[in-house]
Image (cartoon, rainbow, N blue to C red; front, side, top):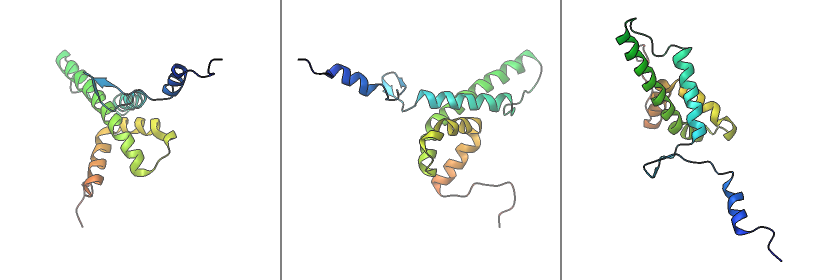
Length: 133
């Protein structure tokens, strides 16, 4: 009588809930696609609604330059969210259910979030615009 769960079925069942990791040139990058997509959406919201990359002019050259800058900001914000979200989740002891929301927020404010995380890890206070006491 055959076993109810064959080794192949057990392997498939065990691998199903695992989260895939993105690889580039055979090197695993440690990035989760769902976190990248949430960071990308947050970056789009920042660019479109918050105007984080304002336009510099109306000529086609200015529009092309602004479009390329916006694309670079969205890419960098997505990568920032992909790498910083798990670390922020560990530092602040957030539950796993908030991971995609945190990735969205980090993607939307990637420049400020990145500065805050670097200052926190380095043990420094972030610079404010006002006078130092």
